[in-house]
Amino acid sequence: MIKAIFYKEWIKMRWFCFVAALFLAGFTAYALLRVQRVITFKGAAHIWQVMLEKEVVLIDLLQYLPVLLGILTALVQFVPEMAQKRLKLTLHLPFPQRRMILLMTGTGLAALVVLYAAQTFALWAYFRAVLAPELVARILLTALPWYLAGLTLYPLTAWVCLEPTWRRRIADMLVAAGVCRIFFLSESPQAYDGMLPWLCALLLCVLFFPLLSVHRFKQGCQD
Image 1 (cartoon, rainbow, N blue to C red):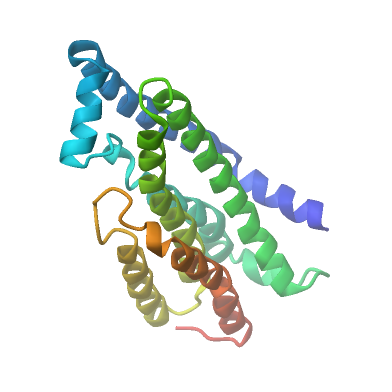
Image 2: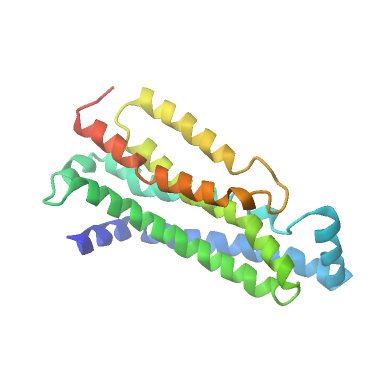
């Protein structure tokens, strides 16, 4: 049954994952080409100077991509479940319901982790050739909260999608927007280093939010 659940989710997500990978690769390549253009005309020393004096991380263009992908992944997975009334059938399968929902969200999270890891590796592989290790670490640590934001917004979006009533769904959207804002309060490099454990704890908490909507669905809550 577990393999069947993973396969069902993969069928829903396979084309989206392919498009998302191309989308992410395109933006990443564009961001790195911008950096390479500066290096070609002004040299790598100029990049070092800009990073140290102006506190930039060179990949600001990628800041909101993880959040966008997290939201879209949840929409691709769970909007059909509600729009086509599949959730009721899914919950009647001979399998623990909570575990099933967690496996479904786990599939989406795994896809996001793979995409984010691939992008992080590409950034690391490029910057390690032109920057000092300390500056590479600065770039990646600055980007880490962006990825955590994407992973956090995924279950929050699933929570919204699975909610059976629109009034509660709107309230959930406001909560999700507030949580998202936490990850983008500062644009300074490594501003969130001290908060990373708390952001990870927040992510762990919201992983179970979709279960709340499923519980309300089972209770028969409707508009």
